[in-house]
Image: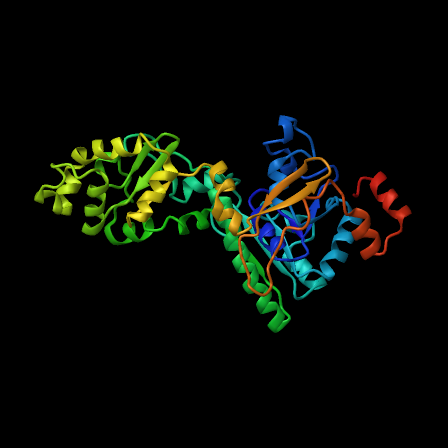
Length: 388
């Protein structure tokens, strides 16, 4: 049962893509994430959000007002046969509605309730609200982003939300396994703030060991001989040349300039300290060619070089085609399109994208009538009274 907002959509999508029956529960009239751009044809509408479309494929969708008594009663019926509830509401909100974990486990002792909040359910920040950028900043990632002589910057996308969802999915799987073994569910408490810290990589260990914050470096301060972005005719490539064998191959590719063939350049430290001599030759090579040609030639020479792909490059690449990362789908409003995922490729039980994101209340009759036993007349009354 998916009650999540933006911070948890990726979590429930992971389960839906791998075959779980995920029921997206929205308030009557539609979830707030349907208002997140971009929109089809730049026209805001309840069923036009490409953001909602991406994160809710493979899910069934119903509407239900959890502030109404009969809405809670219907929710309890769904809980009785569910394995997991995913929610991202503020701390204490579920309890205020009478559907917190302590209440729900009385209905279904094996239920797993996974909660994603900005700072978790304990601690002095537990009641604070926060968006993705706040978690990214307070988790220490923003301080490490950008040029050292300029203010920190935020990464594109929703890094903190994505990682919180991934950690929540992992925790949920462990809790499900425990529930199957023991018959007892539990609550999985995931913090977007803590998830951001976790993916900061070296930053926390460096601080623990040295007391210093992680570093940001400019082009001129880079650690390696050639380790930065170089412009091409259609974008950028990045080199990372370290071993002497790679350096020798690089020099040959650059046309064996006399100065770079000097024995002093055989010393890696010297190359690091004199990168301004090397850069013009690399720029002459890259600026006249497309990035993919540089990439293919570099791979043939056993040199670590990669193109900096745009989203278009990624979608149209041979690699994504071979791995079948996009599935043709049809949506009543969006029309024909290709949907991304699933990422995991299982040899025996592969996941698939088989259903587009639901329209508002698309599966109300299927779930409330066919599965919970309500009559069409009862469904009409519930709709008229605002319960669904």
